[in-house]
Each structure stands twice: as structure tokens, then as C-alpha cells.
Image (cartoon, rainbow, N blue to C red; front, top):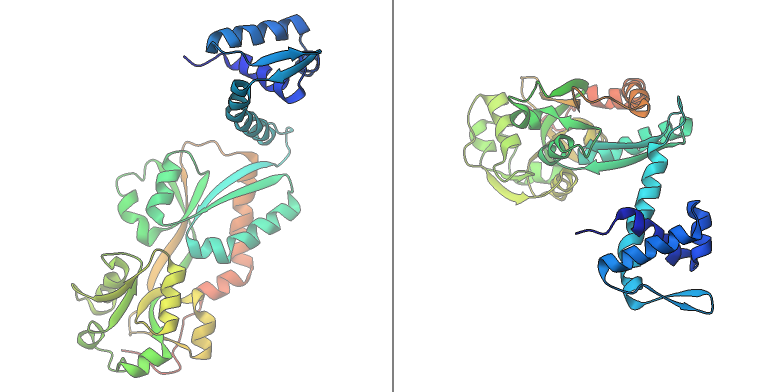
Length: 325
């Protein structure tokens, strides 16, 4: 049986202040009441917690161990209540947001910084990861909302669309790219399906789903067995491997826009339009948003539409080496 939580609270203040009288003042109760709580707690756990020495409360070793357990909970509880207790109409509190690594690394910090300049009482907890884990955190109530790659999340959302509110934020173009050195070294210039599938590839997924989807979209053929020479756990590493010349990989055009302009990365394009990923905001439909959420979400949408983000997302990457099928 767990001890009475109210008695643990009394113990916390006695230990922190080393005085029954001071604990009584802090808790706004009488000294006899504090002493009675302590006596009952000691009886509950069958352990002496303090020794009275010259009007001082000296903790026993058992008391020190109990305080190590109780203190983190009390501190976290006090901090949590600060976020929960808000003045009516005041925009504040904690926003818990999930995001893909790339968007969360490149763009979200700027957005959150801009928002906090206007509303300094708002704090953020950003969770960056792959779509499936983020959706799981959202389902478990550990995120207020998530920005997800809908292209990579459709299977997880299939059959559950009635649970979630899904709103498009921005479209991004997914392109197949390689380094300039790799392009020239392995003969990527001959851009047929039969030639491309013989090359080396970098992927985030063990089954190379994104790569296979690119081939299906552009050639209407199934690339059943690609030579994936590197599987990595996030997209930043995919781009790093591409820059090193390890092979071909699919990435969002805006993430390599500068390298494409400089010619250090070559996009492999076809006459078909680029594969489109719909980055969307996903929330529980029945969740009642806080005032901070209701204020941040329009701010997020406006920031995306009115800054350089929209321009970078909508441009089409063109190769200086004419890497076109």
C-alpha cells in the first residue's frame, strides 16, 4: 500500500525546512497537525524518519532515501501546476509538438522563437521523429498535435481518419538525387529504368518504400530489388550520404535547393511531375485545444505562407547536368 500522499507532502516540507514549526507555517496548518501527520507516516512505513536533537529535526538515513524519491515528484508537480494555472485570457502554457526531423530542425525553431517573442509565457516541447512513432505519441495523448509527412503516414492513418483532424500545411516535392561526382562516376547519364535500378541507393526504410514509390511513379514499373548500400535512421543522414557520393536517394527538393543551384547535387527528373508529399497537421478531432494551441496554429500557417518557406517548397529543382529522362 502506498503512503498517504498528504503525509508525504508534510514530510517533504519538514525535511526541506528541518522544522515542524516552519513546515506548519508553509502549509498553513497547526504544529500538532504536522506532528500527527509525521507520526502516522512513520507508522505507515514502520520506520523512524527524524531524530529530535536540541529542537532540531535531524533526518535518519531512511528519511534521506524517502526524500530522494519524493523531491523530484514535488518539484515536477509544482512546475507542472505553473503551466496548468493560467490567468483567464492569457496565452501561456506548454505546447507539445511532433514533427519530422527535417522540418523540426530547419523551420520549427524559427517559428517557435517568433511566437515566443509575442507570447513569452508559452513554452515548447518538440518531439522529432518518424511518422509512425509520432502518431503513436499523439494517440497516447503525449502530443497536442503533430506535423506529419502524409505520404509516409497513410498506412498508419488508414481506417482511423474519423479519429483525427488532418489539415494540409504545405506540399513538398520529393526528388531522386545524387552527388555530381557519383553522377559522372557510375554513368547515371543514361537515365533509363533498367540503368537506374542497377545503381547504389541510400534509404531511411529497410524496405526502401520511398525509393520504390519514386520508380513506380516515374516509370510505372516495380523496382523490386534495389541495391541499398546504406540504411540510416533519419533523413539528415540520407542527405549526408548522398553528398559523400555513396549513391542515389530520395529527398525533398527544398532541403537540397542550394546544393542543386551550385551543381554539387544532381536531381534525376523525368517528364512526369515530381512526387508530392503533403505535410499536414494531425490532431484528435474531439480534443479541446488550449488558448495557446488556438493561437499558435494560425501563426504557424501564416509563417509558412508568408516567409521564404513557401518559395523554397514550391520551386522545382533543375539539374545543371541535364539529368532528365
